[in-house]
Length: 258
Length: 346
Ligand SMILES: Nc1ncnc2c1ncn2[C@@H]1O[C@H](COP(=O)(O)OP(=O)(O)OP(=O)(O)O)[C@@H](O)[C@H]1O
Ligand SMILES: [Mg+2]
Image (cartoon, rainbow over all chains, first blue to last red; front, side, top):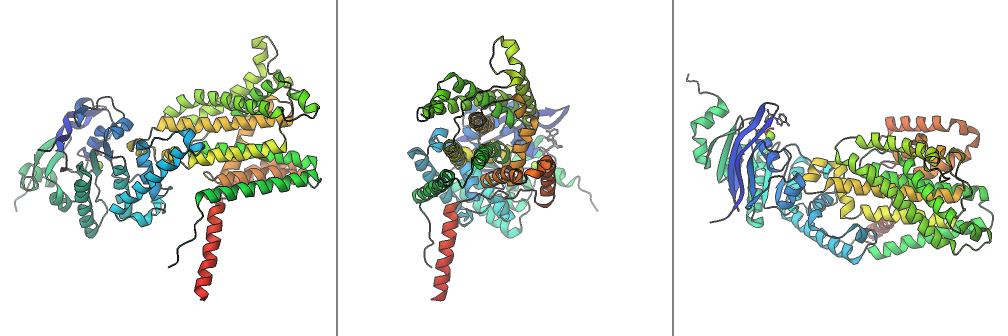
């Protein structure tokens, strides 16, 4: 059996009386692609913000690879192995594609400011290695040819992919994808599904993704969690979920017989 | 297809060194032969000081994306620290006797003192202001610049002995800033900013400007890098202050008024935020132009403001945008262009 990478227990957050996430638990294993779905405003992105330390939960635990992350900042959680993409793309637009990825590698590089100002051998060695690694990572996603382009000038689909590459550069154990297929056409979505599978197979990580595109969710997720009004209302395999009356009701409202 | 021509890094370092030495040689020759008068040599030194001020402000303004409004404050701190140290040494006597060689180690110590003192102030101001997200730095540095000036004016009566000599001014500072020293300090400062920015640390600084939330999500320690860039920027302003003290010979708190900070900011904005080349160019133009147009010097601030307004309307990204000059890239482009044409003719 593969090990559990992420374990969440009864996460809850309250903003001024409202609880966008009232009770959220999940377990994601290594090499698993898990899905998180739910209607607009269900609290999905808020869950990601809780996992990454953007918000501090009012209650509940986040356990990554056996380690309780209570009190960890966003930065520390990244170092611990949580990486994410954003629903509204947040790239470093005015720097090159290569630099975007290299910024992801920053934490794994060790040379000091003195080394960089004096251009000591350590600087050259680590820079060369990191650049090679970044180009290799980009080539996994067919982006090596775009290395020198400013990230903001990439076509939309490539921007979404670059966000994933940058997240992977931090060498995560858990990858959180917030609506990776948003704004993509069906052909791009199919390609993205392949990409996500490839990430799981080549990087041996756990993936949790939020998505509204049901063909994608049903196509690649092994387990799906459904959130509605901040609460988990169902969990199961894609076919379970598709036939679950509570889920159908949450998405479509009560069925009206005509 | 033929392989593209690229210059190896070591060669480009060599080329840049040779070019900079050549420029230095030419200017030195012009000074010794009298083509550049004493008056214009002074302006060259002022240009050098302003280049350091503008490029260092560009670090925290253009690269880090903050808005410091008290750069003159750091310059003042560096100027007074360096000047007080130099006055305590036999530098003045050495310079008068024409024995300038032993002044150099003293100068190096003075520059280090200036940088460290300005850096300490940078840390004291930077850490509280930069831990917060938002434009707090602008307000705090604005306050700092004013407070420093008031302190420099009044500290003697608090201390009970003569230290900064208040509004009367700190006079008889050894004039240690020669053209040579200034020229090489400019190169050193630009080199430091360049090598800092073209490293993992510099990329981290850029990532904060670009998107702070995303930077944190990939594990960039934003407070650390914001403070580092800001402190480095303050230290270099301190160095500029030290050079200024050694050039002008007497310091008055009123020199480092808010308008001085704005003058430096105008250089950065006109040159293009995030372009070191732009900062250098703007520092040269905005220092030399008023000298050339001496008759209109009363209107300098009007021209500055007008230039800034026009720039904001027609070219908000500044003259150079974020373009950075690279001799290596230009040579490569020319050679590749020639090769292409030659191949095309075959
Ligand atoms: N910082 C906050 N303060 C107050 N309310 C918030 C905050 N963040 C999120 N919310 C609220 O929480 C609810 C859930 O938002 P969230 O962005 O998590 O939804 P979502 O499931 O990602 O929706 P979508 O599918 O539209 O992206 C929304 O009603 C939102 O207004
Ligand atoms: Mg969302």
